[in-house]
Length: 155
Image (cartoon, rainbow, N blue to C red; front, side, top):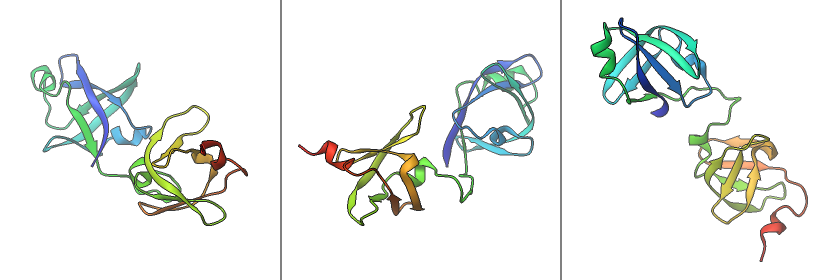
């Protein structure tokens, strides 16, 4: 399960809540989708954009008192399968191999950057995601980087 958002607060008197997504996939709050707050499954009945989040009604949450109980809950969901997307949970732990076949290190985290997310390797280098050419989830990431890029991190 992946963390995809949180319930910020209740909204109104009819059981609506404000959900702030930490995922860029708004289909997470589409009607019919299921989110989990701990062991509790919550099915989205309706949702609409609101300021920096979404106003969501979950099936079975029928009033402000029930909505208030969800405040602060982290919302989780199963990963979305999309072979054209790179997912952080599939990148962490993967070996980065350059265009010459040299293993450059294992991804320890992914840094957000406006130009391109960046893979941080256990060996020190930072590799922009835009250099990824092939990808085997949780195993190997092939990159085609400019000559000398890995030399920048050498002592």
